[in-house]
Image (cartoon, rainbow, N blue to C red; front, side):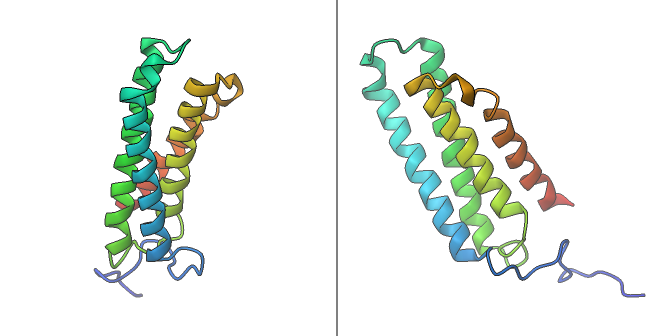
Length: 134
């Protein structure tokens, strides 16, 4: 019987798709999107007709989550054990894009069909973070 040690991966490693570079670039896109959305929300969105205080708050939430998840992907891309994890990074990145992107689209364009999609992005992010602790 082989006992796990500190270098044993939690899940199989070596996916050709998940690379530290992909996670880093995904993180950079999320952080950039979050910063642009935050600046737009603070300045231009307030003057846009039909935007409610709840919409501004939701837009801010989307901006913050994009930035936080992007920063997490930066850190994850440098981790020796999780930078090639088959599930965690893609779940956090994909979940972040879906969660923040759907909220931004809901606020800007009132695309109501995206309402039920937002929690799916949140679930994907949570699942990605949970796999880092298993």
